[in-house]
Length: 394
Image (cartoon, rainbow, N blue to C red; front, side):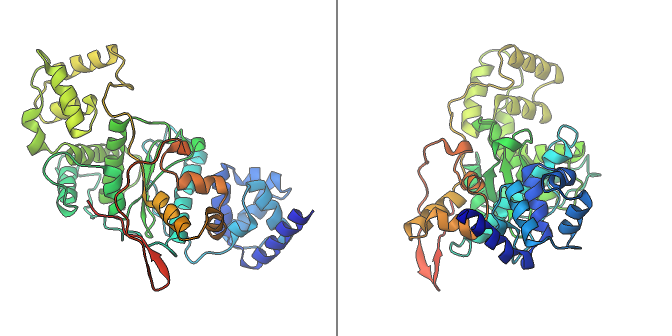
């Protein structure tokens, strides 16, 4: 009974400061429609809509019911300094037709929760300021070289040396981009990205554990952040532009053109395998690049892809690197704060989020089932009462 009273007390404290946007976020996280939630709390969908819009405020008892039904603490609904949802742009999903609106809402809410957690942790730990170049490329620019120019700008402004790009997740994190893995329940949604205005976000699929394909996904989503702040998401042209951006970022035309095959004879597969490991991209990406740059004819490309399919490499190419790139910004922040005497339970209480989602968002790998990688040095020191953590820029 004491835990119930405690929950009721927390609900009573939250009720005067109830934020309808937080209710909508919690409902989307749970993958529920308004009518679904209404049935769980024995109210009407109209009432749920009124709470979410702010037209009405639920009673303390109803706040407790909502929290129980959505598996969150009542404190989750309390107003925050920033409304993450209001400050977020529409996310770029790969295909709007292949996933339901409910699934997209759930995935998007998860990304917003990641921003919420990062913002809460920044009360103690200083992250790199967001520094993503803006190079708008519009959907009617189908025949121009906008995506390639955007990728070259990023390589220049971020100091990517001539040759293969390094650790992409670390590169984005050093420029203030939040990179996280989504939870298993949103795995049907591929990698996606959005700009929250507080911090750009890239959310990676937890199932796709191919190092080479993951790097292309990251570069693709970075392309959206750079080029498509105002573009309508999900369109074929916009997606093609992000692919072109990723190809140029990972395989700059002037650096790789002469290395690509012009025929599929001889030891070409050995050459492709060597290029795959050198540039950190799949053989399929290399073949597509060779065709795009005019090295391979359409016939040679189709024959090569037929071979890829026959060998079962469409989804499972052989490669030397088995471990995917892993985020470190949030995991290292939590580790640093624990070292400073702020334990995980305190952080979860401060963030007011479900513990399982907190751990998923701050994990290094999907399911947190991989050993921690060797991290770059982090130099913590108190400054003005805060613990400051600076990720080394590489």
